[in-house]
Length: 112
Image 1 (spheres, rainbow, N blue to C red):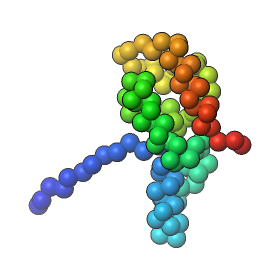
Image 2 (cartoon, rainbow, N blue to C red; image 1 turned 60 degrees about the vertical axis):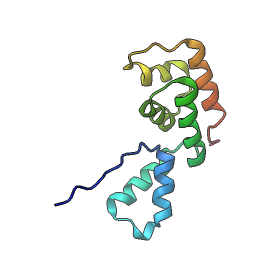
Image 3 (spheres, one colour; image 1 turned 90 degrees about the vertical axis):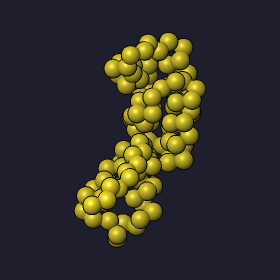
């Protein structure tokens, strides 16, 4: 048997939603439809904005990609909520950086 190269990429909920919508709902199995439903309900930004936000959080704020993806998925509204995602890390993030991250997120939220 030959080995298959597998590539793993971290995706935000909006990116998952866009990917599944591109396949077409009629082509999805039951699990994929449930996933699309979940991603549609809980996506808080557009897919393009999510991708840019992840890149910005990693490049400008020095976050890990996994942290950035989870932050985009939940879009915390204040510093206390944001600290939850960074609490397990081995580094301390200054309050000024946290405020800048919240400000960045505020500028990309969907209006509901």
